[in-house]
Image (cartoon, rainbow, N blue to C red; front, side, top):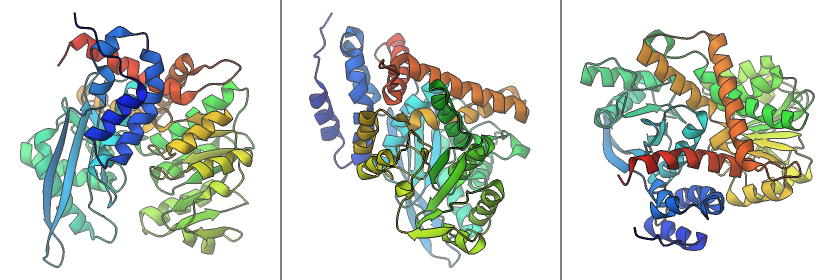
Length: 451
C-alpha cells in the first residue's frame, strides 16, 4: 500500500491558492476549516492516504451557464448562472440559490464548501451545494423577475432533482422566486417533486422555514450562554441586516427577554436605544418586504432612533452580536471593538460574515463565538425537514417543527462541545464545528473508496 505524502498546512494552502487563482472567498473558507482539521488528522493516516481534505476542497462539479431574458422594454439581457455541487457523500446536494450582483464562482464555491459541513452538522442526510447568478432583482418588475427565474430554471433543471440536488432560496431569492422556478421546473419535466425547498405552504412548503435561520442562530446563542449558566434575559444585542434572517433573529431575542439595539442594510445602520420591539420588527418586515424600503426610514417612523450612513453597527456597545447580513461584514477591527466594549458572545446568522482576522481575534479573546456553519444551520435543517415531508407526502405542525428545529440546534451545539472543549471553561466552537462536520463527511467518503 502506498504511503501518503503528509503535506503541512502552508503547503496545502499554497496548493489551494494555486488551483483557485483569484478566488479569495473560497480560499478563505478552506483556510478557516483546514486550520482546525490539520491538527485533528495529524495522526490519522487513512485521511491522509485517501487525500480526504484535498477532495472535499475540490467541488464535484461547477456548472456555469448563460441566462438570457427579456426586460419590460423589450431589450435582451444576458446574465451568468452557476450551480456548484461540492460534495454528496452523505446525501443529495443541498444549498440555496443567490441572485445578487456580487455573485461570482468564488463566492458560490465558498458557500457550497461551507454548506457541506453545515449540512453534516444537522444530522440530516444532505450534501453541500450552492448556486446563483449575478442578476440583481432590485429595481426589476415582478414580470422581469419571473422571466429571469424561468430562463434560469430552463438551464438549471437538467442538473437538479429530488434525489440529486435540491436548491433553496438565499439572498435575492424568496418565496416568490422559488415559486417562479418551481413552476418552470414542473412545466419542463411534467413532474411534481420536492426539487426545491422554501416553497409556498399550498404546494409542499414547510411551516417555520422563513423563521428557521434567524431562530436557529438565537437558539444556538442561547445554548452557548446556558453552558456558562447564563441566558438572554436583559442582555443587549447588536444585529446586522434587516432581511429574513436578521428580523427573525431579532424576534426570537425579544421573545427570550433580550433587547435588540440595531438593524442595518447596505446603506447603513439604525440604532434604537429604546429597543427594537416586536411591533417595530413587524414594521421593518413589512417595509423591507412589501414596500422595498430602506432601513433609514425607520427613524422617521420611530422617534429616538438614529441612522448612521455607510457604517456597520459593531461600534454600538452590546452583550451579544449577530452578524446576519453577508460575508466579510465584520472585520478584524470590528471584532476588537466588540470585545473592548464588553461583548461576550457572537452568533453568525450569515455565511462567513466574520473575516479571518476577526475570527482569530474572537478566539484569542476566548469569547463565545459560533461560526455560521453551526449557528445558521437552522434554515437548511428545516429545508431538510421539508424534503422529508415532500418525500412522505405529509406535513408537520408548527409546534412539531419548532421542537425539531430546537432539537437539531441543541444537537449541533453538543457536537461542537465534543470536539471544541479546550479546557478551563473555554469552548472553541469554530474548531468543534469544523471537526464534527468534517468527520461525518470524511468517514462517508472513506466508506465509498476512491470515487
